[in-house]
Length: 232
Ligand SMILES: *Cc1c(COP(=O)(O)O)cnc(C)c1O
Image (cartoon, rainbow, N blue to C red):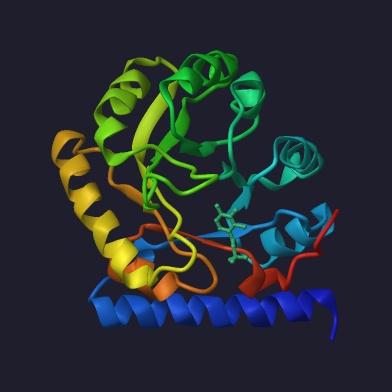
């Protein structure tokens, strides 16, 4: 089977899963956007995805993302940055990412806003909220209690647009319980920020739970592109 046929078949299966999850949850499939996570996969795969109707792609490492976004600049894709952000790279990320999903501390806001400045439109921002226990090693994302201050900082930045929240289900926990927690955090958040209705949650293994909990964006890598090479 050609790579194109393989990706097309996987995409169709993922789109069916999304449609079935939406039907179960009484939601319209148009309300859930598929972001295909292309990390570790070559720009040639990004081209195939665009040709197969994918509009949004996600990357988690700055150097790889920057190179791929440049190489695929003619495709008109929406690029999501979904990885851990270093403050010394944040300005560079905002120069090519259309959506930065992993904003988890106030220190990132200034550099992101500066990096977005030369762009024709503001960069969309999601605040990453942690669903991990507070003592978990390598924890990414802000505490729910820190979201108000972070949201205020983003809202004040001229070239950033606060769109909503992003989260990853913790390893070793039932994603259903984690995403139910997320749905409550989001409810409080949207009450304060009625325009920030995006919720990015759900990966290959747990998208159904995320859709049930109200996700508007699912980030799907391996179910579309296959298992990732362990090292690049
Ligand atoms: C890699 C990654 C994904 C995609 O994971 P799959 O299990 O391959 O679907 C989603 N979200 C984030 C933050 C990631 O880093």
